[in-house]
Length: 394
Image (cartoon, rainbow, N blue to C red; front, side):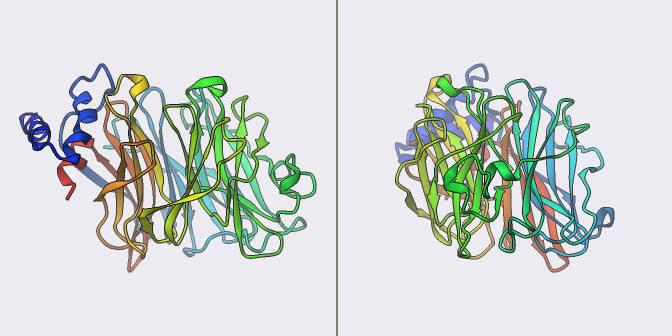
C-alpha cells in the first residue's frame, strides 16, 4: 500500500504527461468513486496447455465479469490441430468466483463432431438483466463459405452465471445472404463475430443495446468488411448496421463518455478505427492510428475510468501485440477517448496472439491471452492493476 501511494506521488510531482495520467489513477485511492484497486501487482496462471483435457491446442479467448464478480473464461478447444474452421473444434467454459485464483474444470458449451461440424470464435456480452449472450460460428471456413455450404453464426445464452447454456440458435440468414435484414449484406457470403467481448451500451437513448462487431466476406474477393450485429431485447432479435469499415477484419467496440461507439479494427500495420453516433447503426469515415502499428491480430478494449461516472479523467486500455509479428502482447493507454494511444506495457514476452480484457469487481484488470510454445498454443489468465501498468510504463 505504501509503495503504491509513493508511486502516485512521484508521478504527480514529475509534472510530465505521465503524471497527467495519474489524475485518473488517483481516483483508484477512493474506491467509492471508481472502485479501482490501489495496489501494485501482476499475477498469472496457465489455464490450458497442449495435451490438457485431451486437446492438442487451445485458442481464441473470451473473458467477462458477471454482476456478482464471477469470471467466465470461454475459448476454443482445438482438439486435433491449431486450424480454424472447418476443423473439429469445441467451445468450452471455465468459471472463477475468487478473482481467477481457482477455476472450475472446463464444461463444453457446444461440441464439434468432425470436419465442417465444429464451432469456434466465441464472443461474450453481459446483458442488463444479467444474462450472458454468447455469439459464435460453426461449419465451414469463412473464405470457403457459400449460401449452400455456409459458415453459420449462432447465439446461445446463460441465465445462471455460465453454469448451463441454452441450445444454439442459428441466426446466419439474418446477417448475410439473399434473406439478410440489411439489403447491403445480401451479396456477402460469410460472416463471423470477433471473438472476445461484445458491448452493452450504458448511456443515452440506446442504453441496454448489445452489439457484436462482425467481419463479412465479400462475394467476389478474399476481403472482409465490418458491420455490427445489434439487439435491443437482450439478444432475442437482431438487426445489422450499415457498413462500418471497408477492408476490415476482427474488430472491437467500446462506448465513449459522450455515448458514441468506437470501433477498433484489425489491420496489418496502422490499426483502423471508426465511430458511430447512433448506437452502432451508421459510421463515420474510417481512419487509422499510426501510433498503434502492429501485426494483423485480434485484441480488446476496456474502459477503466469515465468522467461521467465520477472519474477525474477518461482511461481506456487496448491489448494487442506491440510488434509486426505475433509477439509481445501489450496494453496501450488512451486518455482522450481513443483519439490517440501511448505507453504500451508488455504483458507477454515473445510469441503471443489473441487477448481478452475485463474489469473485475475489486477494481483489478483481468486478461485471458494466448501464448505460443513449440508444443502448441496455451491460454493464460493474468490479473493486474492499473497501478502496476503505470509502474511499468517506460
